[in-house]
Image (cartoon, rainbow, N blue to C red):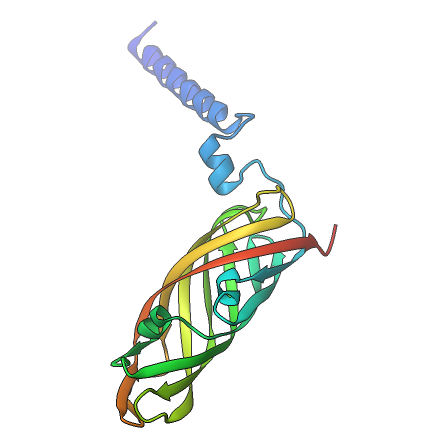
Length: 214
């Protein structure tokens, strides 16, 4: 066997080895735990579904709220509505120079879209929500009142888990709220304040979903 034949044989063996290894990797019957749990590689695509969520902490603050969504592919889209008498940390997130300001009520109507890594729409997702919020404000010194409207966009990261496997779920997420409607100073009674440019915010939801199409 001459040198050319030996070289050709070595190249052929190398090519066969690469093809064999590649085929073996892609032909594995079971994906890794990482592939299965994070990306749902071995999961079936969930059908078209309707989801309904509630925000439990809002009900503890003399309010309430929730969301209604439609789910398809890797997506969940829908609308959110709530009304709450917010605690101080909410005021401090959305307003500055507001020590003498009381937020009597915070109402909102917003829209959201979430993209799940898994096609069964469980586990980790990234999303965005946004829309107008109404703040009913009162100056603690003079008693003067006004209602202002501010608009926000909130990119967020979350996770949704199903304790009962199929219908009921818990959804936890966090993000940064960007004020897209201005931060100009305002005067109410004897207090001059301004809306914050943005702030950290988190969410906890309980929900359920059901199939709209088999």
